[in-house]
Structure formats: structure tokens, C-alpha cells
Image (cartoon, rainbow, N blue to C red; front, top):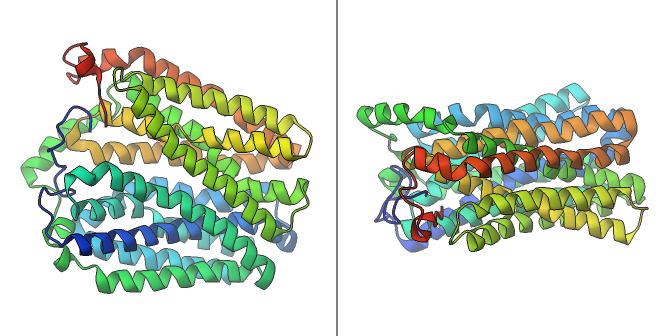
Length: 443
């Protein structure tokens, strides 16, 4: 990432010569990808049953939003300590335990008899899922050549969007046919089954030293500590964190509340609303991939164009969503909302690339964890919860008309970051000259 060469590996993540066969490496990827889907299915199934929980327990929209937001909050708060623990204790062992925890917590949600019990279950889902993304991708990268790093990272992260779609869609259908408790139960069974298979097939002994080793020697850890202040040492990198998190607010609010929106205003049954909302989640995931591709293409000769793409996506989502939610109920409204959803989180790829360019390669993983923390605290946790609070005051449609205004702040953060981007790169010694060749900063 940044200016380091393609042959440079991050210690403990991507060895030049993997210790396993290519066939086994792809098996590790498939199982890790499956667990990531289970992660997001367990997280997002709740959104499909919002209408049923609201009716059965007489919950407010703020309470419903808190059930969604607490998972993301715990993920954001615990990502750092649990990732560090996994590096020291063993990544594979940590992944299996994490999957068991979130699966059993999902079972706890299935048997909950009150809002308080459901909240506790969702709290534990967040604890189990906290470090899976960072530790899972570390295991995957440890068994493949460096040349496949970008491809594998993109594919692995895409599993989150796919899992969200399955969680909302399958959850809605199961809840309609068998009741909302079985929607959680199905997710629990899938997670535990995959965790058992993963624990049998993927072992630290078979992976070699890559997945189970301690991350660094004491000298290397000391060097890394001196670089940690660089995570916040420039205006542009802070703006990337803030812009990404604020834009994530919009995307997560849409993902959490679309089933309820379709149920309330389009009179869709929970099953149908869940499937339809799953399509919006898939559109959001496509936008994430597309935003990164467009940013890379346009910034080949000028790295600052990544910021331009992020700004355009923020303002585009603002215009489309504001217009869409003002329109009367009907197909045109859904088309505009879908277009807005496509752009709502298309800033994720450009933001990650900018963070990578602005931080030293030696702490690249920590930089991505910092970005994840910003996304969780500013967007993933707060988006659903605050939208629910607004919905209690002005109705869900009124709240969704206000939420896109967050894009103004996100776009402003990206614009400020763009103004100081190249200056920050030069000050940090990451941009030695201004020739087109050196301006090409592909992460």
C-alpha cells in the first residue's frame, strides 16, 4: 500500500512463499468467506424482523435502532484489543471461538422474552463479531502470494454485503413462515456448523507459522509504537476517517430501516419487505466495489482524484436520496432510493485507499482498524439508532428525509482532506516529487 513496492509484505500477513498448497489456500478462503457471511447474516437478520418485534413487544423505533446499533458499537470498541489478543494467542483459535460466541448469542436472541434480553443477546453478538474482519483477512492473506492481496481483500470484504443480503432476505422469509425466533435460529445453526468445520479443517499447524506466530519481535513492536502517532498526524487522514464514517451513517441507516420502510409505506409483508430490502443492500455492496474501481481508474495520473470521487459520491447520494424520499410512494421513488443507495457507501474504497496512502506501511493494519473504528462509531452504530430516535419524533419517512443531510458534512470532510492531501504526503515524505509517475499512489 502507499509507496511501498509490490514485493513488500506486511509481517505476519502475506509471506512471499505460502506454507500451504494452493488448493488448501482456497479452502481456507472459502471457509473464512463463509464465516464472514455468517457474521453479517447474524448481524442483519434483526432488520428483517423489526416489524414483528415492534408489534409483539410494543417497541419504539429508538429501541429497535438500539438493537441494531449495539452490535456495531461493540465491534468498533473491541476490534483493537481482540485483534491484538488473536495475534498473541492464535488467530485460527480466536476465529473459531468468535464464531461460536456470535452463533450462541444469536440463539440467545431467538429465545429472548423481552427487549432487555434481546439487547443482551445483540451485545454478545457484537462481542463475538468484533475482531472477525481484521483477523479473518489476516488468516486469508497469510496463505496466498502477495500478488493476490488486493483481489482477495476486495472479495473477502464483499462477503459482508452478500451476508447482509442473505440475512435480511432469508430472515424475512423464515420469519413470515415460521416466526421471528426461527429467523435467528437458522442463523445460529449455520454459524455453529461452519465454526465446527473451520475448527477441523483449518488449523494453525497446517497453516504453518503464518497464522499462529506472534506478530513482531520486541524491537519491531517498539518501532511500530513510534509510528502510531502517524495515524492522526495529518489533516487529510483525519478527514478520510470522518468522511468515511459519516457516509457510512447514511448507508447503515438505509440498510437497517428499509424493511420497515417497505412494510409501513408499501404495505409489504415482512418476508417480501426483507427480500426487497436485501436487493437494496446488494446495490449498496455493488456501489462499494464500483466506487473503488472508479477511484483507482481515475487516479492513475493524479492520486487526489480519489477525493474527487468520494466527494461526488457523497453529493450524489445526497441529491438522489433527498429527492427520492420526497416523492410520492411508487416505482420512481424506489428507483431514486436505489440509485442513492448505490452511491451511499461508494466512498468506502476511496477512503480506505487514502488512509493507506497517508499512513506508513508498517502500521497498515492498524490504520485500517482505525478506519473501521471511525466507521463503527460515526456510522454503523449511530446510523440505525439515531434514525430510530428521529422516527419516534417525526415518523420513519420524516427521519429518512433528514438522514441524507449527513452527506453534506461527509462531502465537506472529503473536500477539506483533498485540499491538504498532497501537502501532507510531501511533509510525511510519501510524495518525493510531483511527476505523474510519483503521483500514481495506488494502494
